Length: 371
Image (cartoon, rainbow, N blue to C red):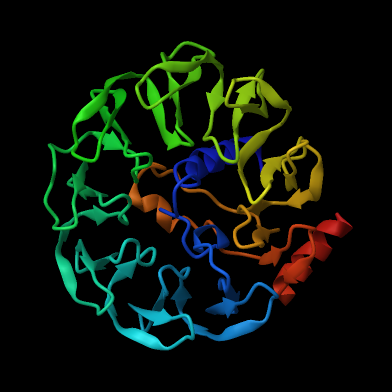
């Protein structure tokens, strides 16, 4: 995997890592945290689910399947999408043309024909399909596409404000980043601008802070609070989201982590760095391989993978596969169609032990070891 591919990946993942699973459902990243989690796995052309000990608990008999959320998981049967429960029983018959994630706040976004709407847990449309794209609900609001504009709706399907040129895909801390005329700011759940639209770029809020780029000049990423006040002065080449008290930042073309005071807590030493989950963070080393570090910056899982997703419910999906990238906008629904998790995937625990390692995964691992 070359550096240009890696930069595409980080841009892609940054859109989705903080608050849910916009485009990456079908991986451990999207699984809700619960005491009895399920993880999507593939056997040949079919998929099913394992538990966190690696035992197949729902037979691999579906054409495609996504993560469990709120007790339901989307599955594809005969090119139509329906929903199963945690035991694998079909609860909502396959009837929808597309689904990208499961339920959030009691509703699930599905496509019927050309348009997207929202169903309840009985499979009935609560918001009829009329949008060009629809994201899951968070904090009582959802982002939808109206043409190529980003709108905000409530649970009745009413647009709360004039659509924006661009936006994030979910509210956090009651705020959503939005773009108008190539500048970014933040709106509240009513769609009112509460932090002026004046930044060159902006990420969503996490742990009370949001990374923003103050101008297009070099080293202009810093952090603001919910009032829009600058908390960490602009000084970074790039900046990610806070999680577990630290955020990845780029200094002199290397990635490390800062704390909420803006002080370096892990020195910049990586080609890329991702948010911490469950005490570990995925990073990319100088050989462009993925591994995991702890809060001291030490590797707990040796960097040897071509791609990985964060730890959720004790496991992380990892891959030895080479991934082909298409030139599509990474903030568009088309990005979800990239072959992001096709290939030789397995699951590891926090010690790096393989919990799920199908034959093609082991073969790819052995091939890499020979190289």
